[in-house]
Amino acid sequence: MKHLLFLLLWIPLWANAQQKTGDYVCPPCGPCDSIVYHKPGVCPHCGMTLVLRDTTKASAQELKSICFYLYDGTEVLDFAGPLEVFSYAGFKIFTVGKTKAPVTVQGILKVIPDYSIQDAPPADIFAIFGGDDGVAAGDPEVISWIKSRDAVTKRYFSVCTGAFVLANAGLLDSLTVTTFHKSINSLQRVVPSAKVLADVRYVDNGRVITTAGISAGIDGALHLVARLKGETEALRIARHMEYDKYIPEQGLVVKH
Image 1 (tube, rainbow, N blue to C red):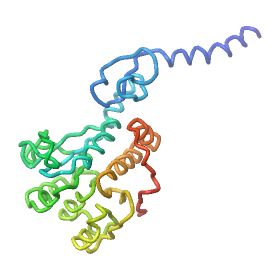
Image 2 (image 1 turned 120 degrees about the horizontal axis):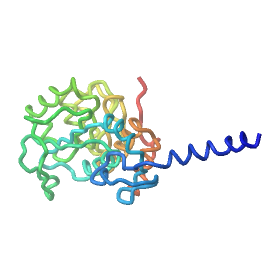
Image 3 (image 1 turned 90 degrees about the vertical axis):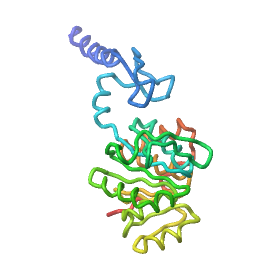
Image 4 (image 1 turned 60 degrees about the vertical axis):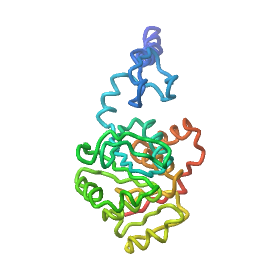
Protein backbone atom coordinates (compact mmCIF):
# COMPACT_ATOMS: atom_id res chain seq x y z
CA MET A 1 0.00 0.00 0.00
CA LYS A 2 2.87 2.34 0.86
CA HIS A 3 4.48 1.63 -2.51
CA LEU A 4 1.23 2.42 -4.32
CA LEU A 5 0.86 5.70 -2.45
CA PHE A 6 4.45 6.59 -3.31
CA LEU A 7 3.84 5.93 -7.00
CA LEU A 8 0.67 8.02 -7.01
CA LEU A 9 2.59 10.95 -5.54
CA TRP A 10 5.72 10.49 -7.63
CA ILE A 11 4.20 10.08 -11.11
CA PRO A 12 2.70 13.64 -11.34
CA LEU A 13 5.99 15.12 -10.11
CA TRP A 14 7.93 13.12 -12.69
CA ALA A 15 5.55 14.13 -15.50
CA ASN A 16 5.82 17.78 -14.51
CA ALA A 17 9.61 17.57 -14.50
CA GLN A 18 9.56 16.00 -17.96
CA GLN A 19 7.46 18.85 -19.30
CA LYS A 20 10.00 21.38 -18.07
CA THR A 21 13.02 19.77 -19.67
CA GLY A 22 14.08 20.35 -23.23
CA ASP A 23 15.02 23.23 -25.48
CA TYR A 24 12.85 26.34 -25.50
CA VAL A 25 12.72 29.03 -28.17
CA CYS A 26 10.63 32.05 -29.16
CA PRO A 27 7.63 31.54 -31.41
CA PRO A 28 8.52 32.87 -34.90
CA CYS A 29 8.98 36.60 -34.40
CA GLY A 30 12.39 37.78 -35.59
CA PRO A 31 16.15 37.65 -34.93
CA CYS A 32 15.83 36.05 -31.49
CA ASP A 33 14.06 32.96 -32.88
CA SER A 34 17.36 31.06 -33.08
CA ILE A 35 18.33 31.54 -29.42
CA VAL A 36 17.82 28.33 -27.42
CA TYR A 37 16.94 28.29 -23.71
CA HIS A 38 16.94 25.23 -21.46
CA LYS A 39 13.98 26.10 -19.29
CA PRO A 40 10.57 27.71 -19.83
CA GLY A 41 10.05 31.42 -19.33
CA VAL A 42 9.97 34.65 -21.29
CA CYS A 43 12.40 35.74 -24.00
CA PRO A 44 14.50 38.62 -22.59
CA HIS A 45 14.74 40.16 -26.07
CA CYS A 46 11.13 40.31 -27.32
CA GLY A 47 9.09 39.40 -24.24
CA MET A 48 7.28 36.48 -25.89
CA THR A 49 6.55 33.33 -23.89
CA LEU A 50 9.02 30.57 -24.78
CA VAL A 51 7.76 27.32 -26.31
CA LEU A 52 9.31 23.89 -26.70
CA ARG A 53 11.38 23.85 -29.88
CA ASP A 54 9.47 20.93 -31.42
CA THR A 55 6.19 22.85 -31.25
CA THR A 56 7.53 25.66 -33.43
CA LYS A 57 7.39 23.42 -36.51
CA ALA A 58 3.60 23.50 -36.47
CA SER A 59 3.66 27.24 -35.78
CA ALA A 60 5.88 27.85 -38.79
CA GLN A 61 3.45 25.97 -41.00
CA GLU A 62 0.62 28.21 -39.78
CA LEU A 63 2.62 31.40 -40.28
CA LYS A 64 0.48 34.02 -41.99
CA SER A 65 2.01 36.03 -44.80
CA ILE A 66 1.06 39.68 -45.23
CA CYS A 67 1.78 41.88 -48.23
CA PHE A 68 2.22 45.55 -47.27
CA TYR A 69 1.73 47.65 -50.39
CA LEU A 70 3.56 50.99 -50.05
CA TYR A 71 3.55 54.03 -52.34
CA ASP A 72 5.00 57.53 -52.27
CA GLY A 73 3.14 59.48 -49.60
CA THR A 74 2.01 56.56 -47.44
CA GLU A 75 1.35 57.69 -43.86
CA VAL A 76 4.11 56.31 -41.61
CA LEU A 77 1.98 55.27 -38.63
CA ASP A 78 -0.64 53.76 -40.93
CA PHE A 79 1.74 50.93 -41.78
CA ALA A 80 4.28 51.11 -38.94
CA GLY A 81 1.66 50.48 -36.24
CA PRO A 82 0.25 47.31 -37.86
CA LEU A 83 3.80 46.27 -38.78
CA GLU A 84 4.67 46.26 -35.08
CA VAL A 85 1.58 44.24 -34.19
CA PHE A 86 1.92 41.64 -36.93
CA SER A 87 5.64 41.19 -36.34
CA TYR A 88 5.08 40.45 -32.65
CA ALA A 89 2.37 37.99 -33.68
CA GLY A 90 4.99 36.12 -35.71
CA PHE A 91 3.48 36.81 -39.13
CA LYS A 92 5.65 36.92 -42.23
CA ILE A 93 5.56 40.48 -43.58
CA PHE A 94 6.94 41.71 -46.87
CA THR A 95 6.67 45.05 -48.63
CA VAL A 96 5.72 45.69 -52.24
CA GLY A 97 5.97 48.83 -54.34
CA LYS A 98 4.95 49.44 -57.91
CA THR A 99 8.66 49.11 -58.66
CA LYS A 100 11.62 48.27 -56.45
CA ALA A 101 12.66 51.92 -56.33
CA PRO A 102 12.70 53.46 -52.83
CA VAL A 103 9.31 54.73 -51.69
CA THR A 104 9.21 58.01 -49.78
CA VAL A 105 6.58 57.70 -47.06
CA GLN A 106 5.07 60.87 -45.63
CA GLY A 107 7.83 62.81 -47.36
CA ILE A 108 10.37 61.96 -44.65
CA LEU A 109 11.30 58.28 -44.76
CA LYS A 110 12.58 56.15 -47.63
CA VAL A 111 11.60 52.48 -47.71
CA ILE A 112 13.03 50.01 -50.21
CA PRO A 113 10.29 47.52 -51.14
CA ASP A 114 11.11 43.83 -50.98
CA TYR A 115 9.28 43.25 -54.25
CA SER A 116 7.61 45.04 -57.13
CA ILE A 117 4.17 44.22 -58.52
CA GLN A 118 6.01 42.25 -61.19
CA ASP A 119 7.57 39.67 -58.86
CA ALA A 120 5.68 39.82 -55.55
CA PRO A 121 4.77 36.38 -54.17
CA PRO A 122 1.21 35.57 -53.09
CA ALA A 123 0.18 36.44 -49.54
CA ASP A 124 -2.60 35.37 -47.21
CA ILE A 125 -3.39 39.00 -46.39
CA PHE A 126 -3.14 42.13 -48.53
CA ALA A 127 -2.67 45.35 -46.54
CA ILE A 128 -3.00 48.87 -47.91
CA PHE A 129 -2.58 52.17 -46.09
CA GLY A 130 -3.59 55.81 -46.30
CA GLY A 131 -1.76 59.02 -47.08
CA ASP A 132 -1.62 60.25 -50.65
CA ASP A 133 -3.85 57.32 -51.53
CA GLY A 134 -4.63 58.68 -55.00
CA VAL A 135 -1.15 57.55 -56.04
CA ALA A 136 -2.33 53.93 -55.78
CA ALA A 137 -6.11 54.31 -56.04
CA GLY A 138 -5.77 56.21 -59.31
CA ASP A 139 -3.24 53.86 -60.88
CA PRO A 140 -4.97 51.34 -63.20
CA GLU A 141 -1.90 49.10 -63.23
CA VAL A 142 -1.87 48.80 -59.43
CA ILE A 143 -5.64 48.23 -59.25
CA SER A 144 -5.38 45.55 -61.93
CA TRP A 145 -2.56 43.87 -60.00
CA ILE A 146 -4.63 43.79 -56.80
CA LYS A 147 -7.55 42.25 -58.67
CA SER A 148 -5.29 39.65 -60.28
CA ARG A 149 -4.30 38.33 -56.82
CA ASP A 150 -7.85 37.98 -55.51
CA ALA A 151 -7.99 34.20 -55.93
CA VAL A 152 -4.99 33.69 -53.62
CA THR A 153 -5.73 36.48 -51.13
CA LYS A 154 -7.66 35.27 -48.09
CA ARG A 155 -8.15 38.66 -46.41
CA TYR A 156 -7.88 42.38 -47.12
CA PHE A 157 -6.84 44.95 -44.54
CA SER A 158 -6.96 48.71 -45.07
CA VAL A 159 -6.00 51.57 -42.78
CA CYS A 160 -7.30 55.12 -43.10
CA THR A 161 -7.80 56.22 -46.72
CA GLY A 162 -6.25 52.99 -47.96
CA ALA A 163 -9.93 52.00 -48.18
CA PHE A 164 -10.16 54.01 -51.42
CA VAL A 165 -7.70 51.61 -53.05
CA LEU A 166 -9.85 48.63 -52.07
CA ALA A 167 -12.91 50.55 -53.25
CA ASN A 168 -11.44 51.10 -56.70
CA ALA A 169 -10.62 47.41 -56.87
CA GLY A 170 -14.30 46.65 -56.29
CA LEU A 171 -13.70 45.06 -52.90
CA LEU A 172 -15.99 47.26 -50.78
CA ASP A 173 -19.19 46.98 -52.80
CA SER A 174 -22.25 46.48 -50.54
CA LEU A 175 -20.08 46.17 -47.41
CA THR A 176 -20.10 48.08 -44.13
CA VAL A 177 -16.77 49.91 -43.92
CA THR A 178 -14.92 52.84 -42.40
CA THR A 179 -12.03 55.17 -43.19
CA PHE A 180 -10.35 58.39 -42.04
CA HIS A 181 -12.88 60.61 -40.28
CA LYS A 182 -12.51 63.44 -42.80
CA SER A 183 -13.05 61.07 -45.74
CA ILE A 184 -16.29 59.36 -44.69
CA ASN A 185 -18.47 61.27 -47.16
CA SER A 186 -15.94 60.95 -49.97
CA LEU A 187 -15.76 57.18 -49.61
CA GLN A 188 -19.54 57.00 -49.55
CA ARG A 189 -19.63 58.81 -52.89
CA VAL A 190 -17.02 56.46 -54.35
CA VAL A 191 -18.88 53.35 -53.17
CA PRO A 192 -22.60 54.22 -53.08
CA SER A 193 -23.58 50.62 -52.31
CA ALA A 194 -21.42 50.54 -49.16
CA LYS A 195 -22.41 51.70 -45.70
CA VAL A 196 -19.56 53.95 -44.53
CA LEU A 197 -19.47 54.41 -40.76
CA ALA A 198 -17.94 57.15 -38.66
CA ASP A 199 -16.94 56.88 -34.99
CA VAL A 200 -15.78 53.27 -35.17
CA ARG A 201 -12.17 52.09 -34.92
CA TYR A 202 -12.50 49.25 -37.40
CA VAL A 203 -15.11 47.23 -39.28
CA ASP A 204 -14.64 43.51 -39.86
CA ASN A 205 -16.66 42.02 -42.72
CA GLY A 206 -15.00 38.65 -42.49
CA ARG A 207 -12.74 38.81 -45.52
CA VAL A 208 -12.30 42.59 -45.51
CA ILE A 209 -11.25 44.69 -42.52
CA THR A 210 -11.19 48.48 -42.84
CA THR A 211 -10.03 50.80 -40.08
CA ALA A 212 -10.40 54.46 -39.26
CA GLY A 213 -7.44 56.81 -39.53
CA ILE A 214 -3.80 56.41 -38.62
CA SER A 215 -3.59 54.99 -35.06
CA ALA A 216 -6.77 52.96 -35.60
CA GLY A 217 -4.68 50.65 -37.77
CA ILE A 218 -3.14 49.31 -34.56
CA ASP A 219 -6.59 48.41 -33.24
CA GLY A 220 -7.55 46.74 -36.50
CA ALA A 221 -4.30 44.78 -36.56
CA LEU A 222 -4.80 43.62 -32.97
CA HIS A 223 -8.33 42.58 -33.87
CA LEU A 224 -7.05 40.55 -36.82
CA VAL A 225 -4.49 38.87 -34.56
CA ALA A 226 -7.31 38.08 -32.12
CA ARG A 227 -9.28 36.47 -34.94
CA LEU A 228 -6.37 34.36 -36.12
CA LYS A 229 -4.54 33.60 -32.87
CA GLY A 230 -6.97 34.43 -30.07
CA GLU A 231 -7.80 37.43 -27.90
CA THR A 232 -5.18 36.43 -25.33
CA GLU A 233 -2.44 36.84 -27.92
CA ALA A 234 -3.79 40.21 -29.05
CA LEU A 235 -3.90 41.49 -25.46
CA ARG A 236 -0.38 40.20 -24.82
CA ILE A 237 0.91 42.14 -27.83
CA ALA A 238 -0.97 45.28 -26.79
CA ARG A 239 0.60 45.08 -23.33
CA HIS A 240 4.05 44.49 -24.80
CA MET A 241 3.64 47.58 -27.00
CA GLU A 242 2.28 49.52 -24.00
CA TYR A 243 -0.75 50.30 -26.14
CA ASP A 244 -3.66 50.79 -23.75
CA LYS A 245 -6.15 52.10 -26.31
CA TYR A 246 -7.20 48.69 -27.63
CA ILE A 247 -10.85 48.22 -26.70
CA PRO A 248 -12.45 45.51 -28.87
CA GLU A 249 -15.91 46.98 -28.31
CA GLN A 250 -14.87 50.08 -30.27
CA GLY A 251 -14.75 48.00 -33.43
CA LEU A 252 -17.62 46.45 -35.34
CA VAL A 253 -17.78 42.85 -36.49
CA VAL A 254 -20.45 42.46 -39.15
CA LYS A 255 -22.49 39.30 -38.74
CA HIS A 256 -23.29 37.44 -41.96
